[in-house]
Amino acid sequence: MNRKAIIIGSGIAGIASSIRLALKGYTVEVFESNSYPGGKLSKIDLGEYRFDAGPSLFTLPEQVEELFHLAEKDPKEHFDYLKLPVTCHYFWEDGKKLKAYADLDLFAEEVNQQLGEPKSHIKEALINSSYIYDHLAPLFMHKSLHDWKTWTNQDAMKAYLKMGKLGIFSTMNEANEKQFDNPKLIQLFNRYATYNGSNPYETPATLNIIPHLEFNIGAFFPKKGMHDITNSLFQLSLDLGVTYTFNQKVDEIIVEEGKATGVILADNKKIEAEIVVNNMDMVNAYKTILKKQKQPKLLLNQPKSSSALIFYWGIKRKFEDLDLHNIFFSDNYLEEFDHIFKKGRIYHDPTVYINITSLYKPDDAPEGCMNWFTMINVPNNQGQDWDQLILESKKNIIHKLNRILKTDIEPLIEVEEILDPRTIELKTSSAQGALYGNSSNNKFSAFLRHANYSSKIQNLYFCGGSVHPGGGIPLCLLSAKIMSDMIPDSV
Image (spheres, rainbow, N blue to C red):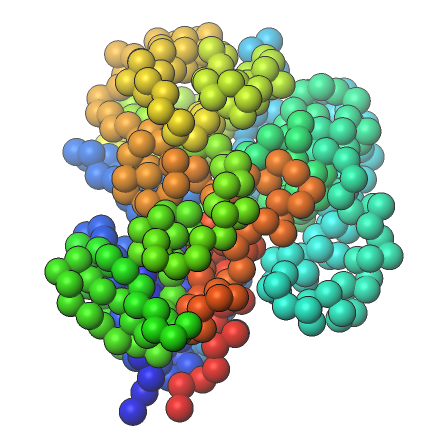
């Protein structure tokens, strides 16, 4: 008889974990408190408009494809995507615009023409980003940092010899100021700190690994939208026999004699299992379903990442200047991040991100219209007056877009839904609405994430964006891989 594995939460890491454990021979049951799978990687329908609710950037598609290959299925028959010719459109208040072409020669030419930056600076920066990736990804993305074998293999030895070149001893901003002359280009590359909810003026320059993913490897778009990542992997898990119970909260992880032996559901029903996997936010998990167990206070008390304020707007017009990904930069980036991380406030001139999937998936909006996923980075929830902050931010965002696009946005908004740190925590159980768990604002942050297993409780494992290796789709999928590799095949 197959051994049983229970997974708590059906975020993308939970779904990926279910696939991997099913392929190891486990009978897998997933309990999800929401009525749908995917966690942050879900969708919103507003009238004739459809929005991807959460993550909007897709990199390292091979992490999705690998799950189909493991199941001996052709990914193209179940999930398809395309490579973006332009990764992002950038806008500044002084009228400067920049297209970040996927073709590196075109991108270097564009940067030179628009910002006067030597082409060589872009190419050298991306070579450096590739260098960091080649030396650190094998350690920090693909292996457990809590296994001594990680630190004694050849990959680790190579990294030790290159420590000074990997950005460990400087901040992202300091490194970018050395790489580029134009403040706008420094700002553009500092933006990559926001990909894991961090502050470029504090986070280590090792995070300059991120541009490698977007430029040297590429940014992609699932042809059916980002939510298709969830849909396709969810269906794959069902095909492998995984069962899901939705609208079902877990009250407690049962621990007996130092071993996880199952869960207690909200109706006091006990479900036994040989393996328990927690995909719930690590902080909230210890506060609730593991509250009877010893608390890892050092990890729980780490500063949290930033959150987001998102306006899902149906816009009754098309804008030719806009692409799938668009950034409207603040005129004072340092002050914006000081507000987010030091003051717990929202700067009056925030950087605005707009994602428009209807440009690549036309049925996401009515003809002649656009679906705007309009987001700003904000502090996590510390009890601020969010209703007032939302009103102020909406006004500031609209004024900013009106200035740069030379239009009047408000009359064009046909439908609207709002997601703020409070509702992010409510829907996804992310502590304080932080999008990426603990922040990465110091050089030791990678080591201050929870391991993919419990060192105190046997047969208890962890996956998802709040544990190693971190948040974002690729890292969440890798967390499932690292975790499942620790679990023996069912016998």
